[in-house]
Image (cartoon, rainbow, N blue to C red; front, side, top):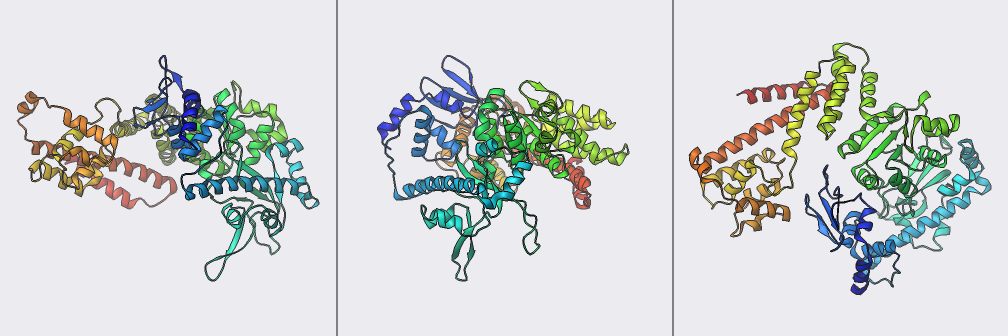
Length: 601
């Protein structure tokens, strides 16, 4: 793709609209827009887009660039691919593709062929569902209330009970390399280590295409019709495509391609556990629904969802596995700043069965739709109820176990007021002294403050400034020797500091003529430059009559003390988790007692 075409696309592209397709932006000036940075975790928006000059910059992580850079970084694609994405979004016709190397041409060509082979497989499965052999599959779908319109909308199909037919059909149009890379086939290893003949991965199963954000099929989930094979061996109910160059299950949300517009319009997503739940809810009229496809949420999936909304209603299956999955998903969502509520359907039903048995109107009463929220409860209420269910009774042991279950969830909440409300509510409902919870939260808050790095003009703490100034002193200086030796021996003392990488680089190598050359990255370089640019208050230094070596020693003692406090808090959590699981906590308790004594010295 020529430079002239790239420049044309860049000039015509509205960077605010393009980036606004990925993250929420709000106007903060005549030509400036701000939002939460998609490249690092943050609670306060430091990401800025300038419409006039066509660039973005994050004051938190210092990512910067133009519209192409943004798309490249966020979608993990090459520059030529980013040009194509932006051009497509802007409706600009694409010129004939040119590549910078044979390797790039091969990689892009393979990805395109994989998209094509998955489209061909989708059509193959769709046609197979209409064949006489698929009568049982059609009966199953009819029994689940899946209509012809639903089958067409979601392109549901059937994989025949045949090892070779699909390969033979697709081999007419695709190379062996493409078929092997697609994940649609398996192959037995040969004695010489090579791969044998390909055979169909999915057989005698109902197929559900998994699409990317653009609606292109990139993988499949397939449900078995039988519980056992002909030899009486159990068959996995669901079989999924393996990881391929197109598909990584931790980076895809089922139905996001169809739901994203409604999610953005309504500013919330309904999260269910399985494909059939998602399909039933969607076809019943609730279009802002997505599914995790039976897997726990990942950070990539959460960031993907965060481009469209920060509000989620979780409606997982009510069984034990569903409740545990809900717990994990809630924890991850809360850490990323989402507002989370939970729906538990009456009768212990999953969304699909509930809708089939009681109808969509009743489901909407118990779910979250448009602007009405009835039976959905706060995630904190759900977790408290779960703790009371797991550890029933009013005995001291039950209360301790319930609190140990809840504490990690409370600590995850980034907002102090919400943490306090959660803790007070838990204490009241469990009948315990809220002072115990408040003390734990106070310690967690202190740890959180220590680990948060500000993106203000002076991001270095006094602790960091003392150590950085010492480490750039000439070789042989006592203060530098002391700082370097102790940091090399005890990396755990400073690993939570924002300047950890910089401290490690300076401690483990001689100081170059230009100290900034020792910085491992640009943010570290900026931090060190600011630190060395500062001039200390001479009155303060003379008043304290403290040498640099003494200051370094005191700073190291502070770091050592903080590390012991951190380990103490970690042990509290580990002991609580051990109690919850019924595991032996003897070693953990012994270590905690030893640390308690050292902190009192």
